[in-house]
Image (tube, rainbow, N blue to C red; front, side, top):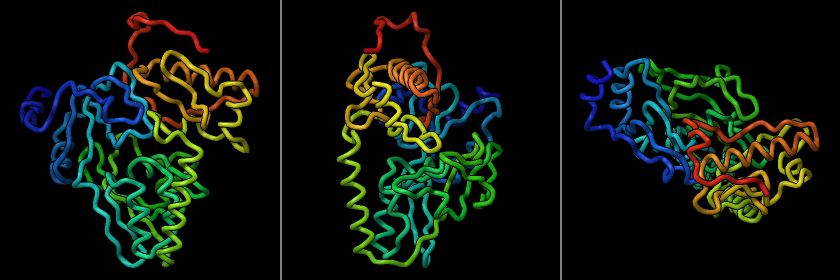
Length: 309
Protein backbone atom coordinates (compact mmCIF):
# COMPACT_ATOMS: atom_id res chain seq x y z
CA UNK A 1 0.00 0.00 0.00
CA UNK A 2 2.84 2.38 0.86
CA UNK A 3 4.61 1.59 -2.41
CA UNK A 4 1.46 2.35 -4.38
CA UNK A 5 1.01 5.64 -2.52
CA UNK A 6 4.58 6.84 -3.14
CA UNK A 7 4.46 5.72 -6.75
CA UNK A 8 1.40 7.91 -7.28
CA UNK A 9 2.93 10.95 -5.58
CA UNK A 10 6.52 10.35 -6.59
CA UNK A 11 6.66 13.49 -8.74
CA UNK A 12 5.60 15.65 -5.78
CA UNK A 13 7.87 14.07 -3.19
CA UNK A 14 11.61 14.34 -2.66
CA UNK A 15 13.48 11.63 -0.84
CA UNK A 16 16.38 11.77 1.65
CA UNK A 17 16.30 15.57 1.85
CA UNK A 18 18.72 17.33 4.19
CA UNK A 19 16.80 19.38 6.74
CA UNK A 20 19.69 21.21 8.38
CA UNK A 21 19.70 24.10 5.89
CA UNK A 22 15.97 24.65 6.51
CA UNK A 23 16.18 25.31 10.26
CA UNK A 24 17.76 28.13 12.22
CA UNK A 25 20.27 25.95 14.05
CA UNK A 26 21.57 24.72 10.66
CA UNK A 27 21.86 21.19 12.02
CA UNK A 28 19.92 17.97 11.61
CA UNK A 29 19.62 14.86 9.49
CA UNK A 30 17.45 14.06 6.51
CA UNK A 31 13.73 13.81 5.91
CA UNK A 32 12.91 10.34 4.69
CA UNK A 33 10.31 11.99 2.45
CA UNK A 34 9.76 15.71 1.87
CA UNK A 35 6.47 17.07 0.49
CA UNK A 36 5.65 20.68 -0.36
CA UNK A 37 1.99 21.01 -1.40
CA UNK A 38 1.10 23.47 -4.14
CA UNK A 39 -2.15 24.47 -2.43
CA UNK A 40 -4.72 23.36 0.15
CA UNK A 41 -6.41 20.96 -2.25
CA UNK A 42 -3.20 19.09 -3.03
CA UNK A 43 -2.39 18.88 0.68
CA UNK A 44 -5.84 17.56 1.54
CA UNK A 45 -5.71 14.93 -1.20
CA UNK A 46 -2.21 13.87 -0.19
CA UNK A 47 -3.08 13.44 3.49
CA UNK A 48 -6.40 11.74 2.73
CA UNK A 49 -4.62 9.06 0.72
CA UNK A 50 -1.53 8.76 2.90
CA UNK A 51 -1.46 5.41 4.76
CA UNK A 52 -2.13 5.91 8.48
CA UNK A 53 1.09 4.12 9.48
CA UNK A 54 3.28 6.80 7.83
CA UNK A 55 4.16 9.58 10.31
CA UNK A 56 3.63 13.17 9.20
CA UNK A 57 5.59 16.16 10.49
CA UNK A 58 4.75 19.77 9.53
CA UNK A 59 7.80 22.02 9.23
CA UNK A 60 7.76 25.81 9.29
CA UNK A 61 10.97 27.83 9.15
CA UNK A 62 12.48 25.85 12.03
CA UNK A 63 13.09 28.80 14.31
CA UNK A 64 12.40 26.92 17.56
CA UNK A 65 13.27 23.42 16.44
CA UNK A 66 16.15 21.00 16.91
CA UNK A 67 16.21 18.19 14.36
CA UNK A 68 18.38 15.35 15.56
CA UNK A 69 21.22 14.01 13.44
CA UNK A 70 19.41 10.80 12.49
CA UNK A 71 16.73 12.78 10.67
CA UNK A 72 12.95 12.36 10.57
CA UNK A 73 11.22 9.17 9.51
CA UNK A 74 8.04 9.44 7.50
CA UNK A 75 6.95 12.55 5.62
CA UNK A 76 7.98 16.10 6.39
CA UNK A 77 5.42 18.58 5.05
CA UNK A 78 6.39 22.19 4.43
CA UNK A 79 3.75 24.77 3.61
CA UNK A 80 4.93 27.17 0.92
CA UNK A 81 3.79 30.44 -0.60
CA UNK A 82 0.21 29.25 -1.11
CA UNK A 83 -0.21 29.22 2.67
CA UNK A 84 1.09 32.72 3.43
CA UNK A 85 -1.95 34.88 2.61
CA UNK A 86 -2.96 37.69 4.97
CA UNK A 87 -6.30 39.44 4.65
CA UNK A 88 -8.28 41.89 6.76
CA UNK A 89 -11.98 42.32 7.52
CA UNK A 90 -12.59 45.18 9.93
CA UNK A 91 -10.63 44.20 13.05
CA UNK A 92 -10.22 40.53 12.10
CA UNK A 93 -6.99 39.26 10.55
CA UNK A 94 -7.00 35.99 8.57
CA UNK A 95 -3.53 34.53 8.25
CA UNK A 96 -2.15 31.53 6.39
CA UNK A 97 -0.15 29.18 8.61
CA UNK A 98 3.00 29.71 6.56
CA UNK A 99 3.05 33.50 6.99
CA UNK A 100 5.91 34.90 9.05
CA UNK A 101 4.91 36.29 12.44
CA UNK A 102 6.80 39.52 11.86
CA UNK A 103 5.11 40.05 8.48
CA UNK A 104 1.68 39.73 10.11
CA UNK A 105 2.59 42.33 12.73
CA UNK A 106 3.84 44.78 10.11
CA UNK A 107 0.89 44.36 7.76
CA UNK A 108 -1.61 44.76 10.61
CA UNK A 109 0.16 47.95 11.69
CA UNK A 110 -0.01 49.28 8.13
CA UNK A 111 -3.78 48.71 8.27
CA UNK A 112 -4.01 50.82 11.43
CA UNK A 113 -4.62 47.78 13.63
CA UNK A 114 -3.01 47.31 17.01
CA UNK A 115 -2.58 44.36 19.36
CA UNK A 116 -0.46 42.16 17.10
CA UNK A 117 2.83 44.02 17.48
CA UNK A 118 4.21 41.37 19.85
CA UNK A 119 4.30 38.92 16.92
CA UNK A 120 7.24 40.90 15.52
CA UNK A 121 9.29 39.61 18.45
CA UNK A 122 8.56 35.95 17.66
CA UNK A 123 10.66 34.32 14.94
CA UNK A 124 8.82 31.74 12.89
CA UNK A 125 5.46 31.20 11.23
CA UNK A 126 1.88 31.59 12.41
CA UNK A 127 1.25 27.84 12.39
CA UNK A 128 4.01 27.23 14.89
CA UNK A 129 3.04 30.29 16.94
CA UNK A 130 -0.52 29.02 17.37
CA UNK A 131 0.52 25.45 18.13
CA UNK A 132 2.84 26.50 20.97
CA UNK A 133 0.92 29.60 22.10
CA UNK A 134 4.01 31.67 21.39
CA UNK A 135 4.46 34.90 23.24
CA UNK A 136 6.75 37.89 23.67
CA UNK A 137 6.81 41.28 25.33
CA UNK A 138 3.87 40.60 27.62
CA UNK A 139 1.44 39.07 25.10
CA UNK A 140 0.64 35.56 23.86
CA UNK A 141 -1.20 34.17 20.86
CA UNK A 142 -4.16 33.23 23.06
CA UNK A 143 -4.73 36.93 23.81
CA UNK A 144 -5.66 37.67 20.19
CA UNK A 145 -6.73 34.23 18.91
CA UNK A 146 -10.24 33.70 17.54
CA UNK A 147 -10.05 30.40 15.64
CA UNK A 148 -7.99 28.32 13.26
CA UNK A 149 -8.56 25.79 10.52
CA UNK A 150 -6.66 22.52 10.69
CA UNK A 151 -6.45 19.50 8.47
CA UNK A 152 -6.68 16.27 10.42
CA UNK A 153 -4.79 13.02 9.81
CA UNK A 154 -7.90 11.80 7.98
CA UNK A 155 -7.74 14.76 5.59
CA UNK A 156 -10.75 16.56 7.07
CA UNK A 157 -10.72 20.35 7.49
CA UNK A 158 -11.92 21.32 10.96
CA UNK A 159 -12.34 24.70 12.65
CA UNK A 160 -10.95 25.07 16.16
CA UNK A 161 -12.13 27.94 18.33
CA UNK A 162 -10.43 29.56 21.31
CA UNK A 163 -12.26 27.38 23.82
CA UNK A 164 -11.20 24.23 21.95
CA UNK A 165 -7.49 24.79 22.32
CA UNK A 166 -7.06 25.13 26.10
CA UNK A 167 -4.10 27.46 25.67
CA UNK A 168 -1.57 27.42 28.50
CA UNK A 169 2.01 28.65 28.70
CA UNK A 170 3.71 27.61 25.44
CA UNK A 171 1.13 24.91 24.81
CA UNK A 172 -2.16 24.27 23.04
CA UNK A 173 -4.51 21.34 22.50
CA UNK A 174 -3.70 21.11 18.78
CA UNK A 175 -3.33 17.41 18.03
CA UNK A 176 0.11 16.20 17.04
CA UNK A 177 -1.24 15.01 13.68
CA UNK A 178 -3.19 18.20 12.92
CA UNK A 179 -1.70 20.62 10.41
CA UNK A 180 -2.77 24.23 10.87
CA UNK A 181 -3.90 25.87 7.63
CA UNK A 182 -5.06 29.31 8.73
CA UNK A 183 -5.61 31.33 11.91
CA UNK A 184 -7.92 34.23 12.67
CA UNK A 185 -6.89 36.95 15.11
CA UNK A 186 -8.80 39.88 16.58
CA UNK A 187 -7.02 43.22 16.63
CA UNK A 188 -8.16 46.71 17.58
CA UNK A 189 -8.38 49.92 15.64
CA UNK A 190 -5.40 52.07 16.45
CA UNK A 191 -2.67 54.33 15.18
CA UNK A 192 -0.49 53.11 12.33
CA UNK A 193 2.38 55.30 13.51
CA UNK A 194 2.19 54.09 17.12
CA UNK A 195 2.03 50.43 16.07
CA UNK A 196 5.01 50.76 13.72
CA UNK A 197 6.94 52.58 16.45
CA UNK A 198 6.19 49.73 18.89
CA UNK A 199 7.37 47.15 16.37
CA UNK A 200 10.55 49.12 15.77
CA UNK A 201 11.13 49.23 19.53
CA UNK A 202 10.62 45.46 19.82
CA UNK A 203 13.08 44.82 17.00
CA UNK A 204 15.63 47.13 18.57
CA UNK A 205 15.31 45.44 21.96
CA UNK A 206 15.68 41.99 20.38
CA UNK A 207 18.85 43.04 18.59
CA UNK A 208 20.31 44.42 21.82
CA UNK A 209 19.40 41.50 24.07
CA UNK A 210 19.37 38.38 21.87
CA UNK A 211 21.90 36.75 19.52
CA UNK A 212 19.57 37.11 16.54
CA UNK A 213 22.38 37.03 14.00
CA UNK A 214 23.72 33.71 15.26
CA UNK A 215 22.70 30.17 14.35
CA UNK A 216 20.30 29.60 17.22
CA UNK A 217 16.89 28.15 18.00
CA UNK A 218 15.38 30.93 20.08
CA UNK A 219 14.56 30.46 23.76
CA UNK A 220 15.79 27.02 24.80
CA UNK A 221 13.82 26.59 28.03
CA UNK A 222 10.47 27.76 29.33
CA UNK A 223 10.45 30.23 32.19
CA UNK A 224 9.54 28.40 35.42
CA UNK A 225 6.70 29.96 37.42
CA UNK A 226 7.96 33.16 39.00
CA UNK A 227 11.46 32.73 37.57
CA UNK A 228 13.46 33.62 34.47
CA UNK A 229 15.25 30.74 32.78
CA UNK A 230 18.17 32.93 31.74
CA UNK A 231 18.77 34.09 35.31
CA UNK A 232 18.81 30.53 36.61
CA UNK A 233 21.24 29.54 33.86
CA UNK A 234 23.46 32.50 34.63
CA UNK A 235 23.40 31.80 38.38
CA UNK A 236 24.46 28.22 37.66
CA UNK A 237 27.58 29.53 35.88
CA UNK A 238 26.55 28.38 32.42
CA UNK A 239 26.92 31.63 30.46
CA UNK A 240 29.32 30.88 27.62
CA UNK A 241 29.47 27.15 28.43
CA UNK A 242 30.58 25.04 25.47
CA UNK A 243 30.27 21.46 24.31
CA UNK A 244 32.03 20.79 21.04
CA UNK A 245 30.89 23.53 18.69
CA UNK A 246 27.72 24.28 20.64
CA UNK A 247 27.72 27.19 23.07
CA UNK A 248 25.45 28.91 25.58
CA UNK A 249 25.14 32.48 24.33
CA UNK A 250 27.11 35.12 26.22
CA UNK A 251 24.52 37.69 25.20
CA UNK A 252 21.41 35.84 26.39
CA UNK A 253 22.07 32.56 28.16
CA UNK A 254 18.68 31.01 27.42
CA UNK A 255 19.86 30.84 23.81
CA UNK A 256 22.15 28.12 22.46
CA UNK A 257 24.41 28.71 19.49
CA UNK A 258 25.85 26.60 16.72
CA UNK A 259 29.22 28.34 16.49
CA UNK A 260 29.93 26.59 13.19
CA UNK A 261 29.70 22.92 12.31
CA UNK A 262 27.98 21.75 15.50
CA UNK A 263 25.88 18.60 15.52
CA UNK A 264 22.40 18.32 16.97
CA UNK A 265 23.94 15.89 19.46
CA UNK A 266 26.30 18.59 20.71
CA UNK A 267 23.51 21.14 21.07
CA UNK A 268 21.16 18.78 22.89
CA UNK A 269 23.92 17.44 25.15
CA UNK A 270 24.95 20.98 26.08
CA UNK A 271 21.36 21.86 26.92
CA UNK A 272 21.00 18.81 29.13
CA UNK A 273 24.21 19.76 30.92
CA UNK A 274 22.74 23.23 31.51
CA UNK A 275 19.58 21.63 32.94
CA UNK A 276 21.69 19.48 35.25
CA UNK A 277 23.76 22.39 36.53
CA UNK A 278 20.70 24.58 37.06
CA UNK A 279 18.99 21.81 39.02
CA UNK A 280 22.08 21.24 41.15
CA UNK A 281 22.22 24.94 41.94
CA UNK A 282 18.52 25.81 42.37
CA UNK A 283 16.60 22.50 42.51
CA UNK A 284 14.54 23.76 39.54
CA UNK A 285 14.38 21.45 36.53
CA UNK A 286 14.11 23.54 33.38
CA UNK A 287 11.56 22.43 30.80
CA UNK A 288 12.44 22.45 27.13
CA UNK A 289 10.78 25.11 24.97
CA UNK A 290 12.62 24.15 21.80
CA UNK A 291 10.93 21.20 20.14
CA UNK A 292 13.29 18.27 19.57
CA UNK A 293 12.36 15.82 16.82
CA UNK A 294 13.91 13.01 14.87
CA UNK A 295 16.21 10.11 15.53
CA UNK A 296 19.41 10.18 17.55
CA UNK A 297 22.59 8.70 16.12
CA UNK A 298 24.34 6.31 18.55
CA UNK A 299 27.05 8.16 20.47
CA UNK A 300 29.73 5.72 19.32
CA UNK A 301 29.14 6.90 15.75
CA UNK A 302 30.49 10.36 16.53
CA UNK A 303 34.17 10.67 15.75
CA UNK A 304 34.84 13.42 18.30
CA UNK A 305 34.05 13.19 22.00
CA UNK A 306 33.75 16.36 24.04
CA UNK A 307 33.32 17.56 27.59
CA UNK A 308 31.47 20.72 28.54
CA UNK A 309 33.77 23.58 29.45
